[in-house]
Image (cartoon, rainbow, N blue to C red; front, side, top):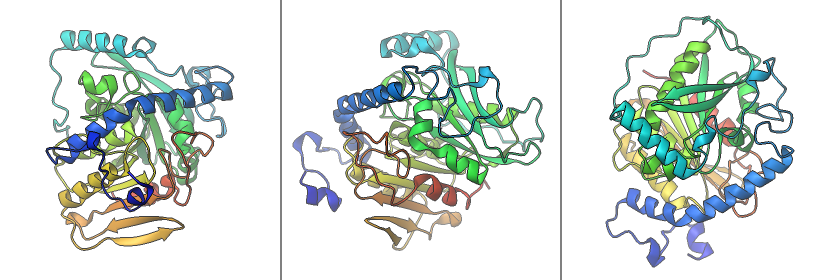
Length: 392
């Protein structure tokens, strides 16, 4: 596709990417499969840079904490960031496939990913054995698989005052500690006072439907896992269960879309970054507030697929009328505000921007996935959006 066509958002005409069915989910999946080799190379290059910056240790970026740019918490050594995955035996896709198959054989069939969750009871605060301020690495078991996640608790957290919670999901072939650095969300967490959790996917992937990797190909119940993470964190911190949100990058953005469809009883709003919809039908039981961010020059998850996902949310949420456009330099946001039950849908287009987190780490927006753009800070914009919405 020529540069002018991409800039104006026209569909690409490459014969290899034509969709005979017209289903945007199938088209996004086909495009994704075509970019997987590029994604692997890009994230491997990024991993090498991070290893160099961390002195060759996957386990402790820079100073041994989850985010070298943040002030250290008061945790013990047990709360330092661990190796790239909580379960090293599933680092290789082939090993992960075997582990998942064995787990499913022993555990039996999983519950459907869109099974409704139990009614959430308000957290009784303060909680017993509160984690407290700082960065905490937690390991849990879900469907017989060891799974890990990092919890960042800002200094302003008060054990008796319910705090909002944001799940921040890494991309394909990435890991939670990389997402800490790539998104730089801890800075916004510290300023605004919300708790942020960075879970780890199986074999560096999430099952977001058509995308991606081992998690998708083996049917890992990541919707169930992320529900469980919210429940576990809420048992260790004073969390406002009506103000729980999800975001993610790339495969994590796909997963945020899926959570909006299949866990709308847990998540009040979602904010995919460089993601598309990987499920053919959205089973959300209510209108879902969505804000999305996408680079116009994204070489890995095409901008057109991200926009198609937002168009589906506009229809799902019953939005009418034309969106309001707000410009930020060469970038802009479109917001649909006349939607059912007062929800909103918003799409922020970064130009120029590649496969990066808007306003996140410019250093880690490496050649091959860039360019970087901070006309819009995704963390600030999504938090402003999240603050408008809570579960009914």
